[in-house]
Structures are given as structure tokens and as C-alpha cells.
Amino acid sequence: MKTVLITGASSGIGKELAWVFAEKNYRPILVARRKSMLEIVAQDIKESFFIDAIVISLDLAKSDSAEKLMEIIDNQNLNIDVLVNNAGFGDYGDFYQTNTVKMESMMNLNMLTLTKLSRIISAKMVEQGFGQILNIASTAAFQAVPSFAVYAATKAYVLHFSEAIAHELKPLGIHVTTICPGPTHSEFQEKAGMQNSDKLFDTAPLAFLVAEFAFEAMMKRKTLAIYGSKNQFLTFMLRFSPRKLNTMIAAKMMKD
Image (tube, rainbow, N blue to C red; front, side, top):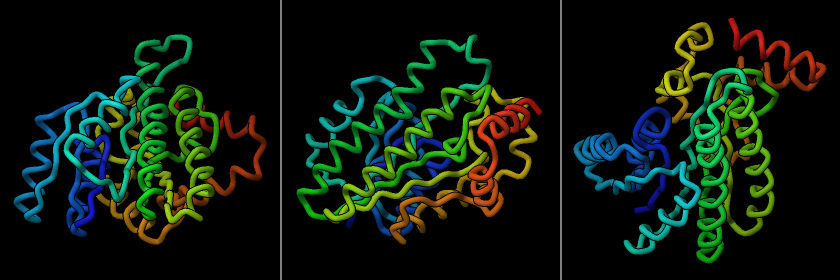
């Protein structure tokens, strides 16, 4: 049985990815800060698929969390066949009013921990000659987003970083897939402080649909996959519009 490590697995897309992988007979290693919620996910997976998911409670927003996580994994002699870097959060509001502690945690989680885990685990995958990495970015990665400036920038980093290592690792038998969903029904909206942005989420898909899409894209060994035909069209059109205009439109969408 193959093993998949999923970060941010206590809710949202990460939780649904755990279900999708378990259904496909992968043993999930569930990592997030909230242990009680991870244990519920693990118990549901055991009852539904007779698979013992492994629970690791860890705050991945800490700068040294990747090293701590890998120490736990190595001590349990666990081999990772698939790495899913899903953990992340946003922070809505004007940049000059940003809480710098929260901003640093977001940058650590969205970029630093993702990068370190990709580095450490990809090296192990190269040694064994196979492996897959699935990184969850966002449609926000394709443009500047006022009121979401740092979050969008972190996702741009995830996208460009992932495409670069996908090129490096492909000849070595390691495949990297990046998923860019748009707004999705999950806890993201509340955690980001976007309770008044219902218009953005009115037609948002369920997290389970995004998780299924992500798994299928990974299995097809796609380098980049954008969820939804509307998101695909809008992302394509960004190429032909002035960057300043794109930023103005994004600002209006975030304020409506």
C-alpha cells in the first residue's frame, strides 16, 4: 500500500483529499494543528475503508516545522510515495493594517514549510526512483490581488516554484502537479476574515469536487491544472490584458 502525506488535512480540501486517496487505497498521513479534528478524519477513514490513517498534530506555520515533521516520520520508518502540500491560509484586508505576526505565519506555512518538505521528501523520492508531489496553489497566483496582497504573492511563489521543480524532477521519475482552484467552500473564507465576501463564494464548488479534480490531475501527471472552466478562461484572458487593469479588476472583485 502506498503512503501519502497530506498537510492541512483537518478540514477543507485537505480533509477531502484524505478521503479521495484512502478510497484509492493509499494510507494517509494526516498533518495539521488540530489533533481532535484529525482523529475524527482518521476514524472515519478507518470505518469506511479499513485503512489506519496516521495522525500527526503539528503547527506547520512554525519555521522549523518541516524538520520536526520529518523527524517524526523518520522515527516511525514511514516512506512517502506522495506528498500533498495543501496547508495554507489567507488574510483579507489592507496591507498597511496587516498583523505582522499573522503575516509571517502565513508566509511560513504557504511557502517555507511547503518548500522545505518538497526539498527533503523529493530527495528521498529520487533515491527510490519514483514519487509524486501535489501542491495546492490558487487562481490568485496569476495576478496581484489588492486586499489579499501577501496571500496572492505566496501562491504565485507556489506556482512558479512548483513548475520549476517539476521540470527538474521529471527526468528523475518524480512528477510534480500544481492545482489552482478559485474560491472553494471550506473554512478558508472564515479564517481569512472574508465573512462579508459572500459574492465571491456564491457559486464556489465543494471542497470534495476540487479534491477529486486534484487527484485526477496528479494521476494524469499534469504539471498545472486550473479548476473550473470559468477560472481557466479568466486565467487565459489575463495574458492579454494590461497588468494594471488586471489589478484594478481584482481589487473591485475583492471589495464587492
